[in-house]
Length: 209
Image (tube, rainbow, N blue to C red; front, side, top):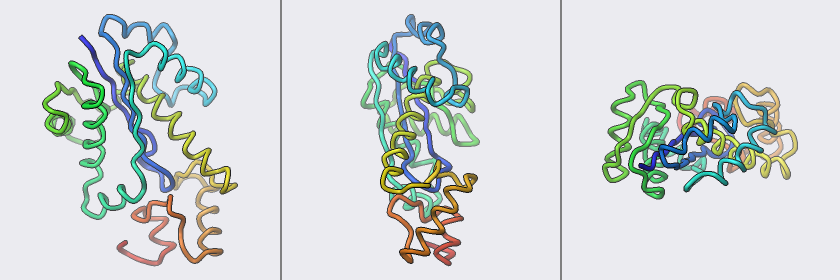
């Protein structure tokens, strides 16, 4: 049996993409991830995540990473459909990998509903959805690491031409300061900003975008 773990990174960020990653392994090989020291990405340093990311890619039967751009996120938020958007991309990852079953980290308060939605979108793959799946199931932990490393790399590429961008999260003062300075200079926000996020909307002086 091939099992897939799926997780996201960057959902709450106001800058850069949302990243969805999936990792597939035979169920009798999943324990190898624990022996490698794989845990929820938040419990590792950036250097450890980078090292483990390479190891995961080597041992996985297959993996897939997708980037969801800010414009797609904004379009979904306008329709109160961010959870649907994430379900759609998780389903795409699962469809691409073709596992026998999948474990996903739920962003929906109703985990069963979220799992059913992804199952329908992925062609009726067996999907189990849980809160904090990235800390409960090592195969989802592996996906969380790939997603986080890919997200960090995306922000790193933006930072090369945008010094001081920070992590991109509203809680990061560097990112907030960067966005304000950018807007002051250009009278607009960058294309990689999520215009539906409150700090960005406040800068634009608009209730709706």
